[in-house]
Length: 463
Ligand SMILES: *[C@@H]1O[C@H](CO)[C@@H](O)[C@H](O)[C@H]1NC(C)=O
Ligand SMILES: *[C@@H]1O[C@H](CO)[C@@H](O)[C@H](O)[C@H]1NC(C)=O
Ligand SMILES: *[C@@H]1O[C@H](CO)[C@@H](O)[C@H](O)[C@H]1NC(C)=O
Ligand SMILES: *[C@@H]1O[C@H](CO)[C@@H](O)[C@H](O)[C@H]1NC(C)=O
Ligand SMILES: *[C@@H]1O[C@H](CO)[C@@H](O)[C@H](O)[C@H]1NC(C)=O
Ligand SMILES: CC(=O)N[C@H]1CO[C@H](CO)[C@@H](O)[C@@H]1O
Image (cartoon, rainbow, N blue to C red; front, side, top):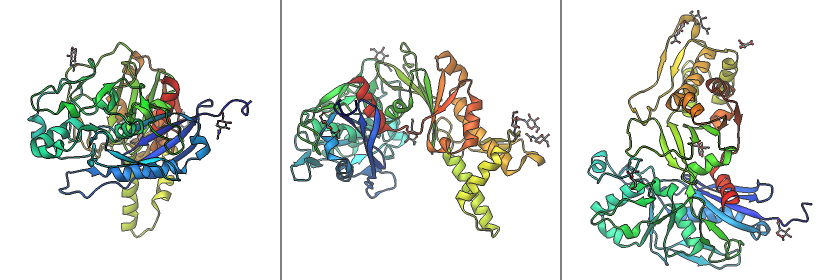
C-alpha cells in the first residue's frame, strides 16, 4: 500500500537562539523521516555587555547547510514549508534587495544582503528608565528590553539614521518566509507580533500610531496558521510555487508538537520550566498587564490563548546541586565525575519516598520576584541524607511551577492530562514521580517536544 500512495513531505524549520533545525514530516504518517540541527555560532562581539546581536548571514548559511543535508529526492516531494523561531527579536532589511539567489549546481538557495544584525530577545540596551519613558502600550503584555518595538524605539531615539537605511522589519523567521516567497511586505503572525509589544490581540493591530514612529517598517499582522505565499524560486530542490506558512512562535510550536488533545497541559522542564495549556475559546486576557502576575497569555490559534507559567528554575537547579556536590567532593580530595554523582543521587532519591525537608529551588529568582532566592528549611538531624535532599529538591522544583498555575485552575479550565517534556524531566525519575504526585491528572511523557516538528504538524493540520 505504501508503494501505491505518493510520498509527500512537509518541511519544518526552527530558527532557534543558538541553532537551526530542519525536519521532514511524512504527511501521511505524520512522522519525522529526516532531521538536521546545527549550531549557528552567530553571536557577534558584545560591545558594551548589554548588546546581544546575531549575524543573520551566519544564521542563513547554517539553514542552507541543514537543508543540504536533507535527502534531495524527498525535498522534491515537499508540499508545504513551515518556519518557527526565537520570538521577540528584530532585524531590518531592504525590501527587494535583502537577499541574493544562488542558482548553482548544488541547488538554488539564497543568502543575506542589505540586512541589519538580528537584535535578539536577550538584548539589554533598553534600561528600565528608557522603557518607562516610552508611551504606554495598549496590550495585555508588558514590554521588556529585547522586544522588537522597544528596540525600534531605541533606534528612533539613539540612531535615527540607522532606521533610514531599511524598509522592513521582522523576526529572523519572518525574514526567511519573506525571502522564500519574494514578498514586498512582511506578513507576521500575531504570535510573533504580540511578542514585540505594542500589539492589541483583540483587534490584531499595532498600537503605534504615534507621531514619528516608523509604522511603515512594521509587518502586516496575519492569523497564525495562515499562508504567507508560495516559494518564488526552486529552493534546495523544493519546487517553485510551494505554499509557505506565515512564521510562528517557537514556544507555540513546541507546545503544539506534544499537545495531543486540546485538554492536555504541557509541563516542560529543561534548563528552566514551563507549564502551559490552551484556555477555553471564549477566554480573553485582562486588558492591562499585571507585573506581579505569575502567568502570561500568548496567542495560540483561532483566537485561543495559551496560559503560560514560566519559571527560571528547572533543570538548572538540579545541575547546580550536582555541581555543588562535585566541588565539595573535590575539596575533600575525592575525584568523582558529575555524571556518577547525578546517577547516585537519583538512586538515593528513589529510595527516599518522601521528605519533610523543604527546598525552595529559586536560585535565579523568578521574573515576578527577582529577589526571592533559594531556601532549604525544616532541617532535622535525620532528614539531611542525599536521598532526602534529592527528593526535596525535585519536589521543590515541581511545587514552584505548580504554585504559579495551580491544579484547581487546570481542573476548572477542563485540563484532563499532563504531557511532560524536556530533558531534565524525562531523564530524572524522582522529578517525574513528583510531577505525577503534584497533579490530579495522568501524566504522559513526550520525548519529542520540538518547534520544528510542531510547525510542520501545524501546517499539516491547518493549512
Ligand atoms: C516522490 O513522489 C513520487 C510521486 O508521487 C514518488 O514516486 C516518489 O517515490 C516520492 N519520493 C520519495 C523520496 O518519497
Ligand atoms: C484592544 O482593543 C479593544 C477593542 O478596541 C479594546 O477593547 C481593548 O481595551 C484594547 N486593549 C487591550 C489590551 O486589549
Ligand atoms: C522546553 O524548553 C526548552 C528549553 O527552554 C525549549 O527549547 C522547548 O521548546 C520547550 N518545549 C516546550 C514544549 O515548551
Ligand atoms: C514508597 O511508598 C510506597 C507506597 O506508600 C511503598 O509501597 C513503598 O514501599 C515505598 N518505598 C520506599 C523506598 O520507601
Ligand atoms: C517539618 O518537619 C516536621 C518533622 O519532620 C514535620 O512534622 C512538618 O510537617 C514539617 N513541616 C513542613 C512545613 O513540611
Ligand atoms: C520523611 C522522613 O524521614 N521524615 C523524618 C524527618 O525527621 C523527623 C525528625 O527527626 C522524623 O520524625 C521524620 O520521620
